Image 1: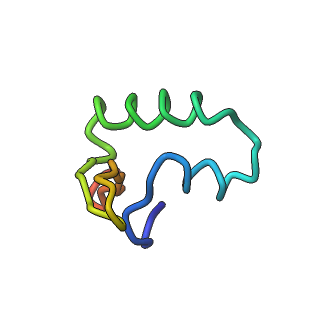
Image 2 (image 1 turned 90 degrees about the vertical axis):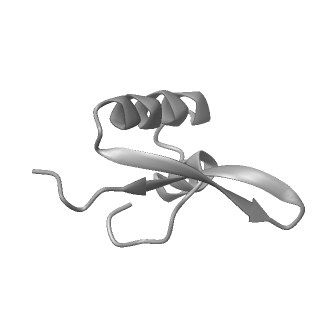
Length: 60
């Protein structure tokens, strides 16, 4: 996710090549949000409002 545009959980899953389940990706992203490593926002894509995730570049 680093350096890319904000991605939906499904787009993250696609980039992983199916190595995990979509549900597992949602759980992992939510865990990273709770830890403050990833933030989420909402975007309108087409006529749908979708949740998108973005990694924070200032973590160590």
